[in-house]
Image 1 (spheres, rainbow, N blue to C red):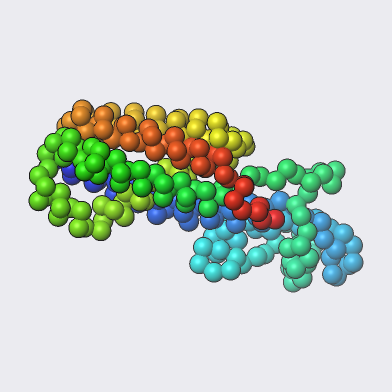
Image 2: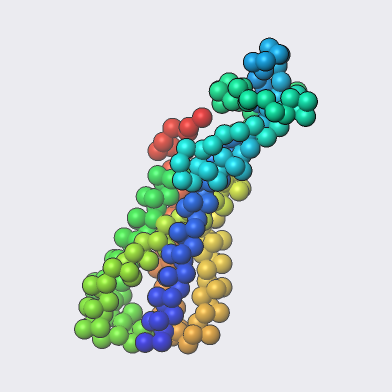
Length: 248
């Protein structure tokens, strides 16, 4: 039962991370949308100026309601720092630019639909992997559970919710690695998933020694997670940007 306790504790920690990951990803998307310098015509002097939004403030306020927009920089400041910021509507329509009026390369975003699909598929693989038709019997022996105890656990909601949260957390981790690498393909997705899976393996090996988890349980879970990780990499890497139209 000690091994089972550490197993559910790990799922709980991963689920908690997912709870904070989702708002962080949403805030990052809002921040990237409003950052940068934009050229507008000042309504007061009718001359082109450069303004920048307070992207951090927009990201924070965008968590709970519509993002509160305010200008953080303007080429007319500090002389006109107390203006009414009537240029905001035009700034919303303008695209960010860099020096020399060269439009910057748009940063790649996380496409949520492929991530959610990958999370659902990986969870379904886990349900099949741990079913009575595949590895349930050796899994029960490795954990030290009997069928009545397992039946009671299956009736709880928390294990299922935590396992779903873990699958989504891993899929978002793969998507973030692809955004960081600025490349998307099936092969890149598999590589990113493998790197993330290997990191989890290292943590699992350490946890095995500290918590006394049996090697048989570790082998069973590593087999499932390797298969699920590969599938997640294929889906996230291959379908990102293809299931939906990129929003500008």
